[in-house]
Image (cartoon, rainbow, N blue to C red; front, side):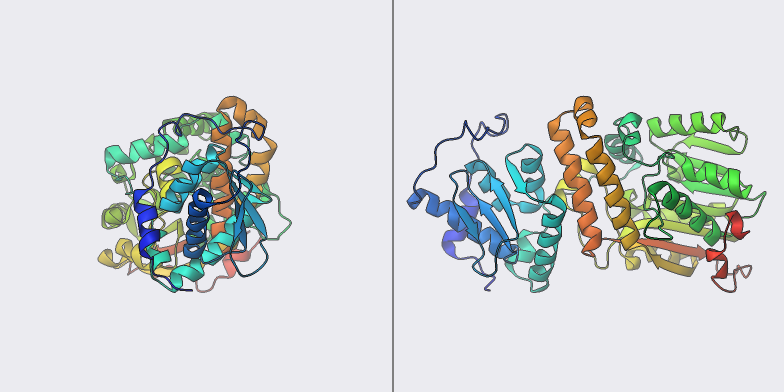
Length: 442
């Protein structure tokens, strides 16, 4: 398969302009669409565009179906999935920038998928990965065009607000009962989501070797589940920071209800303002929102607040190689987000000579977590649509399915990195304590 774009293809991609009405016109029902026309010169252009799109996607076993019923597939293999494109402007947009526009067009119903959305995402991911490995045109056109929003003090608040402050009731419909929105840890494949989330918190606490009476700083505490778990089951005191107003209110309410407000302090502020001295530092699911340009600053904060005998753990989505965030997810779902490589994470540790003690990859655990979330989301789809609208439901369905596929196809990783100040010798001799039973390994 050649990777060069011929002159006619280049002209088609660069001169396409969508219909002015496309942004406001809802997708037509099948009965409203124009009758099918015989393929000819006009539809020859569309067919060439789709052949071009299939080529930059690596010719996956997927068929595209135009609004007139024409089906276009790669010349090799039998199509496993069909993608329906309902209008000409949608075709032009998705060819111009698949990474950015597919999400919006699917959310609007102007592109539909016959069969499993998750399976389609997995097929496309594997095909694109193979095409990009060969370099050339596919790698260039699949690169996101969306510039990530900065994670300054003000920018971080705005970015987090767009995702986390859309309503606790929405998240309560499909998360576990403790409202953990990070990768769970499945001790066995049959664990429930609730069991796996508790196991994840215990796994983190054992890695940190928490002891009663210790002081813990948490950066990015979500709805407070881990902070409360550490205080209740491991006897520590926790100072937890978060810039999401809705999450902090919920966490404080839970602390009062459980009688733990004297042991856990929830602070509505940025991680950069953490003060005090602590025996442990933990961050689960926040690093994705920090930005590589701020990693040195995060390391400065940790070194300032962590005792010489302390331990730290960062749990984050990551990648095996440097790669920009998906443009649509960064724009519509997670502004300012970026999953780092392990090499990029070293900018946190190396300047202060933190010793990296343990690195664990829980990639498949996150895929299983997302399967649970997607199943619960679909069960509540009607209620979610009533809270928002159909476009919102379709967007979040795509986000959850696409994220799951990214983990199953290894586009994304889940790193847990345990570290400590360089002179700390009070460390576990083996990993045996990680797999003991009961809180604290008792």
